[in-house]
Amino acid sequence: MNTIPRTIKNYELISNEIKFLPKSILRLKILKFLYQSPLSMKELNRKANIEYSAISTNVHKLELENLLYRKESKYFLSNEMKLYMENLMELDKISQMLEDIFPILHNHVVHSIPTYSICNLSRLENIKLLEADDLNAYKTYDFIEKSLKHARYVNAILPFSYENFNNQFNDLLFDNISINLVIPLSIGNVLIKSLDTSKKNLKLDFFNDNESNHMLLICTDRKMILGLFKNDGGYDQNRLLVSSNRNSINWANELFEQFKKENI
Image 1: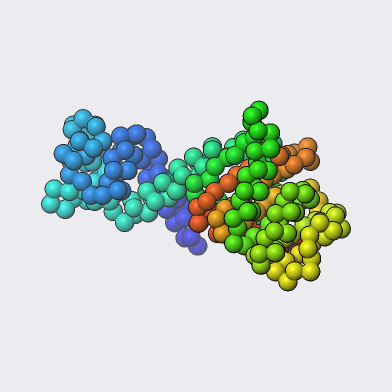
Image 2 (image 1 turned 90 degrees about the vertical axis):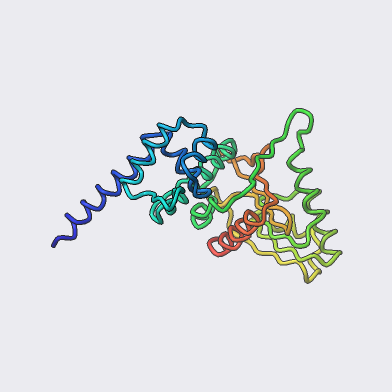
């Protein structure tokens, strides 16, 4: 019977702790440096470029809250504070990443990305927004062709058939590169006619295409490439999210498998 009052009390305690930290930019700055390594007040003064008196005041407040402790002359974060800072740094990374990729998320069909992959967006690293420009209207297509040329394997969700991509796939098939394509039934006949389906290293899966599962995804051993459809239903050929980072490539491959699981 005491569960609810105890839960409310714990919530208020945690809430107050969380509010205490962001109230002071100086505290967050101090904690960020201590998260990197234990430091003395003099070292904090030098690294953080904060007045010594301000460091002393805020460090003392953090000590009273049991968020850090002193050992000899250096200050260490408590285990609770380390966990909090890990989450805070992760949130900051995600926020920055979302800001960087906002142009391709805004007014685009993002619900085509499986929930599992959305929940793991924090794993994306070194993600870049590649945009076509006036000098090269086919910049995104050229990037995909170049990426396919050097691939050791390909996992791809293809919402449309494009002759240059198909030619590149055939070259890879000839070189015995494994290719796993997931395509909508609506373009199945067109694509099959363009590919050398006699090759055993080609695997084709089909899905019933609708507005909720349209996307372009290409995963190779070196690249992850993600393209989205606009809310008006047209594919955005001017923008791609790309990365050469291993964690991002793994994320994309998991997205590929999850998409197959949900749509095939």
